[in-house]
Length: 324
Image (cartoon, rainbow, N blue to C red; front, side):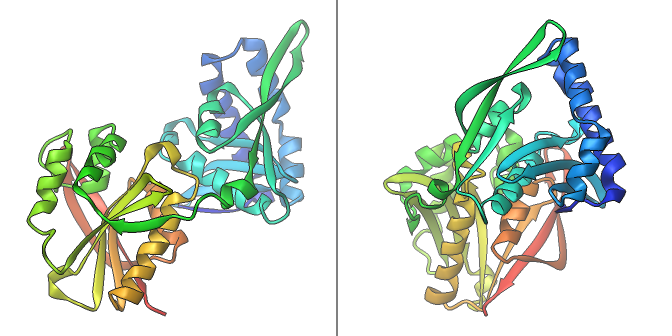
């Protein structure tokens, strides 16, 4: 998966994605006249102009465009992901890219929220500051939320810190897992049953906590537990550290916590444990995690593993980062 600036060659496909999403998703939330209004508003001419201005982006999966997003100064517009690709973190990934670009010049990002997207925007830290009215058809007025996010504030929250894992941490960490798919993406086949309990997690760690090659860590924002991961020496190799069981509080994902936790863990591995290389594995069906690892410097190597998860063969991509 990659994101890049859109070109005029992408214009037709962007239009198709926007229209397909509107026609598939919006009827669940809006009257037909409002759906038609959205469809006409996001027309080909407007899309072409935004591409010409250098404001539109496309998200690609296996070389095919699956989503798009646009910024006009500090205003985010037209964030759409194909219906069959929703729920995989693609929308969050597009939003993060747009916010990163906006943050180079502005302290806040703004958007007009459609009903299907409000939940995502709240999760990403946006707050409603006003409401607007749009007469999308004769006698039909749409009320929408005008939302804003303080990018400067988002970047100056409490600095995270890592400390050694404590047994009571499991009571918090296990609440972040809400489905068997979540659990398998986090731990593959390391736990036989779902759901896991704090006792299961503690039992998993108990036999290795006293070893000098296993380092479970917990990330704190102030006094609040917000993340967890383990560092270990694989097969007694003291030059290599393996990251695993990487997880962040699901209520604050998409806000940079995972990236900051990984950066702290990388620093610990290289400066304290004196590792020369760090490795990890990430499932192909977990793009949010994959691009978080890419953002802190991990790159794919040539090794591919497969795990039996939920009756399927899941492809695990091996990644690594070397000490500079």
